[in-house]
Image 1 (cartoon, rainbow, N blue to C red):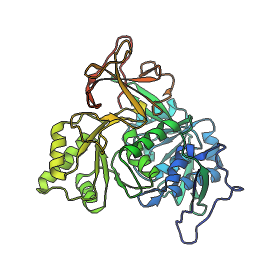
Image 2: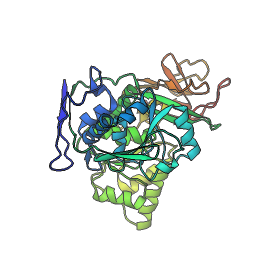
Image 3: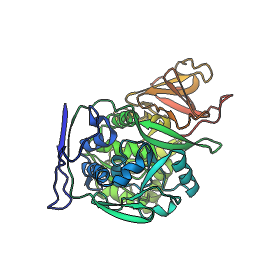
Image 4: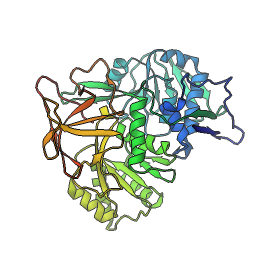
Length: 437
């Protein structure tokens, strides 16, 4: 059995342990099977703040705001936040309901659609983003000062809630698969632009985050640069949840800036960086501009995903940094990672890597679903606890799960060395365009 207990101090006089007579944990046999509690139990820190403090703040917010609890009721929450520790508090304050992860870069019309489509009862955000929300009577929770305080705005009336005087959690539980209950909803669009809400459970997200911990051997000494949006699962799982589960540190960047990112790598002790090809291309351009290679002795893992990665960029990155740029593959419906060039194997540049821990990957005939041997082109299909539960409203034009296998709509081929390569997209007849990761 894993027992986790902590006290989180914000001010010298504000250390407090929540007694069971005041705060009741969710009525589950193992609270560590819920994503927020599992994150808290990892003992990690984000931007210097213990994740446990942020989780405690989220549940304290629920305890002290009856209107927020009423607004959620049988409805979901929405999180419209920049990359920050407030994300953790918002997840905890969602009261066990699914949280819609809304991109801060989404257009106002997109935000309004997602809130209505997902039946959102309350929104967690910050003052700078609140004007992007549609008018209405939904409570808006401002988390600019989390975990010390929050402001709940209802009908134009703002109530400030102190969160810093009731900190502390005492949990008992075992590390086991997450609960098969809704945890998050992420909207993804097909080629025609029709958005669909992907429903992900605690089990989906914890399975993939724990797989990330195993895949890159994350531990408490790791320091991860979070420069990807948390509203997208690449950032949510790989750069936030996984390092916090491992007890590591996360440093966020509200906006990706190549100069600042290189400075953190060289002077901030960053051990892991994850990004899309365009980010690494910008970093390479900055290194070439200054005419000196990267001097970041702590940096050990660089992960790239989200779009096809040119081998020329991988080659140049290694020349300038001495660290391999390792490509992975995933999609929102798989929470997201499915394939990765793991650090304890030689980096296969140009490939998607080998199956992620806890994920089975095969190549199958696009129409018959029959498995195909290595060397044959077919559809990439994945299976595991990371595979999503479905779409809001059914998603008739979305990806299909057949006999437990998620058909990704991507074409690929398995190599003789167990790695996979991407060969393009598949558009089967009788089905609408598939979603992208």
